[in-house]
Image 1 (cartoon, helix red, strand yellow):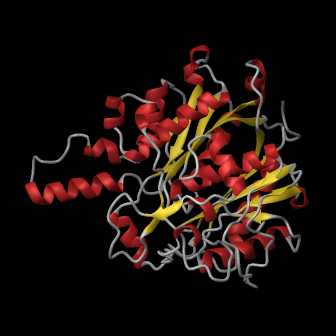
Image 2 (tube, rainbow, N blue to C red):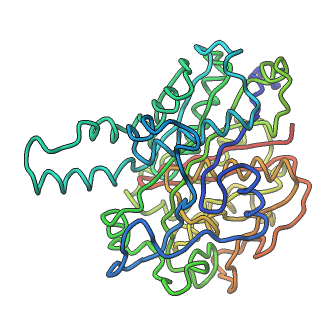
Length: 414
């Protein structure tokens, strides 16, 4: 099946997610629509003395439920999460890889930061013990393409394999890149998404010193409050999200039931500042408009926006401006999953894309929790605190990152 412009129709047939509120599609979705927060005091290390002492950790994750102990030991946690999310996505899609041409099954999984835990540990070891003391697997663990490479290794897939790094837009840009590969006919199936695990002393202190993290340490579950007037920063999170994307023709041949159609992708660069978004929202809006054109839909077709919604003063304000630039004064429902799972950095765009797919599929809008005080500069319908039923035909998911990286994905009903 082709679109009016001759583009192949690409569908989502499976979802693999590992988050603080659920480690499979069903648990994740049920937690989202119930407004469950996964944010707690940091357990990965002793956070005493840090400005921010809270995080959204995947506490129930055991990689050996999916891969062998030997495989797990050779991977950093960021790769473990990616590989297991890919396995879960394949299972969710009912995809039998033994029946596939494995040269036509590929993988695009990125990370914004990579394996800081291993870098910090091995640096300390080298400083203490000197040359000859570093773990031989240290370098293979930290190479940025390893989440995608390891996912391919455990699944035995040989198609296009690469890693995208566009800061907090990584997950969305990975999915958009996979969309292009499928449209070009270079693969039949692509696993696409993002992964992150950087809850380490150095990273938490680094973000803390940038004054971008919430310091609501006494109320972790209430700390992430996108678009609320009293927001004071984001909460760092970890996790992974992987979608199974395939051509509609391929899905129909194997009898798969798609969850949604991936209709379009847009991407721009602010070219303004390494951390501050362009204040007029011009280029974020341009990414949204680019995605709409690629999807061959009009702004008035969009019935829901899954916001980047970080819970920082600047980002939420500028995203609001960008939404108004792209959609005018229409009160489109907008919600931020980060209110529950924190900011999973390179995984965010993928996990939130998964949430957008499920929003379209189920006809339920996840809430933005912790919304208590309206901010006049964020005059949006943020679906406050409670999920809402809605018949959504087309939705968009925003993802913006340091360096001015902007990505937007459009999904529709099948």
